[in-house]
Length: 387
Figure 1 (cartoon, rainbow, N blue to C red):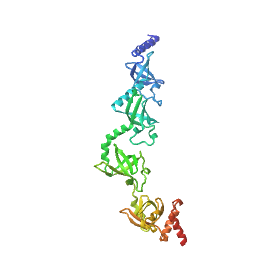
Figure 2: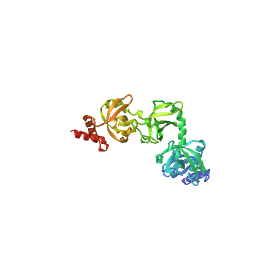
Figure 3: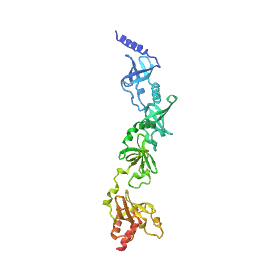
Figure 4: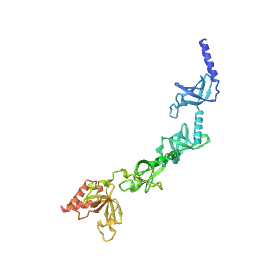
């Protein structure tokens, strides 16, 4: 057979094979090789088709199939071989898969592309879906940008108009995962256990911490720090990952009490070595009660200056008008009870010894002028007058 006859026979064979398929027909084949501009697809027997590489790339320009992968495509030409195209077919296949996932209640992977009014636009394969802001997480999202660019598992909660309107929920997927893990997690929540959780909400009296499996515990404001905490928001915020200690579990109500300060060193453990009766210390008034003023002399250590230790003014309760929360001053330690965690103090008055006044004045000189109290100035003035 001549070379011309061989070429004609090859063309005839390709034409015969191509006639097995009709233009517009959707067929399935296996990717067998890649060329510079096209990919070669086996479509059955010895038949092989071509498809433009551009049609096999994702939104970022990367080829999203490998040799051996099965693809669906439409026959666009049977002249001199089979030419395929995925235009229209690919989206149709994706839509069918999404509809199947919706009906079966299966999770699908999606990437949060952008923030839109009321929620997010999520890309699932080449389809676009909407996720309401309330459905992106179990806890309230304070900053919508937190989820941008993240890839999550979503549940399709609404599928309409042949896939033109798709609504998804990440929250539903998370809640179902929590329910599945709840039993195992609850077994680990026992008094003394140290766990990692996420702050779900912050209220005036404390914060609720999600321990997993939909189980929440209360971190009371009094258990957040050894120092007095006026506002829980100053310590934790919704979404924070924190480590806590389980303090109590009520079997009847299943209420869980958590602690944060228990994981920190107790400042009272050093009181016996750091303080002694007769010592003059600097303190800050934290609150004033009818019976006296509470004074923080170190982070986490509050002492009580009884009302009777303040200068009398002639009428009961008048002392409190000259004492304001937040003011600082010099106080003498009168008693220490480490077992009960109590320290009794009294404001330094004119009868204070010269040694104590000089100790206090030297301490104040080492601090910024803005932290000086009017009492410290009086003490230095008293030292100068006596010298």
